[in-house]
Amino acid sequence: MIRQLAGLGVLLAFSLGSPAIVQAQTAADYAQGVTVSGTTATLFFNPTSTTTTWTDVHYAVDGGALQNLRMARDASTGKETQPVLQAVSAGNTISYSFTYNKGAPAYDSSQFTYTVGSATTPTSPTPTAGQACFFTDANYGGTSMCTSASSSWVGTAWNDVISSVKVSPGTQVVLYGDINYGGGTTTLTADTPNLGSVNFNDTTSSYKISAAATGTWNKQTTFNIVNGTHNAYDNAHVYWAIIGKDWTTGKFVYVNAAGQLVPMSVNDNGALTKNGVTYTNYFHTIAQAGSVTIPPINSARLMLSVGGPMYIRVNSDVNGNIGYAGANIENPADPNIDVTFDFMEMAIVPDTGFFGNTTRVDQFGFPVTLRLQGLGGFDQTVGETATRASLFSAWASSVPAQFQGLAQTPYSPYRIIAPAHASFNAGGANATYLDSYIQGLWTKYASQSLVFTDQQGTFTGKVVGGKFQFTDGQGTYTIQRAPTTAEALLGSGVLNDATGQTPGTAGYDKQLQIEAQLCAAINRHIVEDPAHWSTPSYFYVSPANSYSKFWHDHSLNGLSYGFAYDDVGGFSSSLHTAAPTVATVTVGW
Image 1 (cartoon, rainbow, N blue to C red):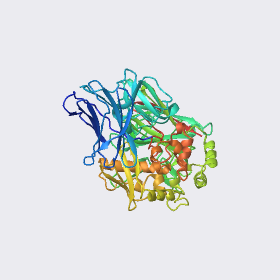
Image 2: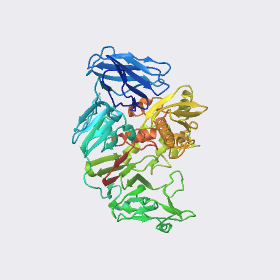
Image 3: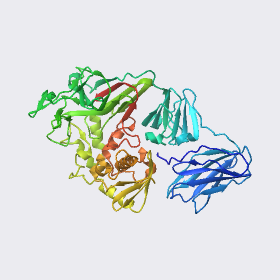
Image 4: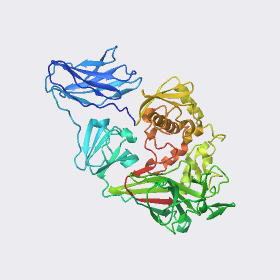
């Protein structure tokens, strides 16, 4: 769940005597503090948003009865004040927080503490060796707990409320979005003042605490390709290839059996021929090489096939720049249309390690699992473990009628194809499948505001003249029109359009992030309920992307890449470790 990240204050107190104002803490939403004059203490709250029209303060003195009061507002300045309803003296401690609105939604601030007459600045807890400290607010504010023990269930009080984490040196914390170490994950090895920065704010339901990676990563990763086809194919008929870009040259390369990165060349065409056209053969069988150790590689794919290799052709432009043509499953004449294949995506970065995932964004060829291991005990697995036949059967018995054809001729028996590559694309029988839902959203938000919070901030959007315009008080970000069904499923067109923004600026990033958030919410049919944009049990009410739903329902821990922006909210099959050692990829059947 995503919640408002209210600002956190550092409390600076002054001695009793002449009127003095505590140095106000300034945050994105407000400044706050305490004034003391004689024996009277007054709390103040100064909102930065013009949409804040009321504020409640909740305070207690020395742990006494909690007072909940509506603050008095100065109409000329917008500043809210509330005197403490008892005399104070040096040593009294006032604990307080605020509830305030920004338009329709209401938000809770951090919890603050002020000691009258104190000249010290309180600090948040610091974890001891092997510990992590969890906080309910960003910047290590709010309620806290410190522990060295892992927890498969954080408990009701801590579920979906962790917003920042302190990590002791040499310790690693893995946060999980579901109980029992399930759901999306993020790995922390250092203090993280705002989990929104890693797209994991208020999402944690379980966590593991362990020693961080020890030793130095040698920048080598071993890939083990495992035949899990249950004898449907022997090792001589399970194929793999790795292609990507060399970090040093930026040029396309393939991996040979010795693990070397070899530059691609148009002269590589000719190793294979199909329908009179020549192709490369960068593939190895498991019988030839079931394991390979490689250096860092960028923009890479590990391609897998059974029965025979895939057909990859190298091309060059007029300037001699090399590229390659892979499978085009929308083209019935493509040489790979009758090849059963699959792949995973990855980048192994020299300084930051492995980033990769299995994927169902385009199609399903056969079950694939990726187990990634690394220094410090990192060990996570994603993918599908069911048999291919059982998945085809489950598809036929569970998906709506409009999706049935995606696993039928001409796609079957080779694949289950993603909807926007088939009948849900422009001109297809289901090209308008999501249109009524999308148009309903555009109609609704022409008269209402859509408010959501992500790692970039809190955004308020409204449809004006057919354009969905969002603002965060710092800029305006515009979705140019309602997307088509295909654009929503693909995350393309107006949902991947930074028109009006300058590349390299915060506004550019925010606009694309807003489009990703809305795209994910449309696919999951959850746009109207931002409070549950990160709650899977609320997803996929029809009409929705039932293709994506199916893969989440049949993947380990419910994690899958069912559409381009399925990483929004941490639900994709992405894995990351800074020091990868072994990647085990199993080809299922």
